[in-house]
Length: 123
Image (tube, rainbow, N blue to C red; front, side, top):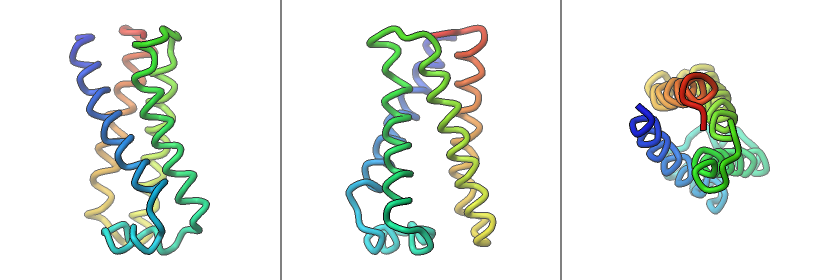
């Protein structure tokens, strides 16, 4: 089971690292042009903070394998779950039901990883 959790965690980390990096290095105009329509309603500093949170969360998901800090991966997964729940709310408030699906799935996956890492499979 631990291999499955680490596999899901690795995929999540890569996805959040990519998404966070895009938000950190791209202007709001480029993000909107790339399909991130919500970025038009957020100040650039907020977008950078979201990108930083996603990038830090991605690092926190895999760092326990390197430095063996107990529950760091669980805390990172829980933080990313909260961040994705906020993304779902943002999309739903904007009337973007289809765009809310991806962060909803990510919220569930990161919440499951957090629960498993806090519970029976700590790391």
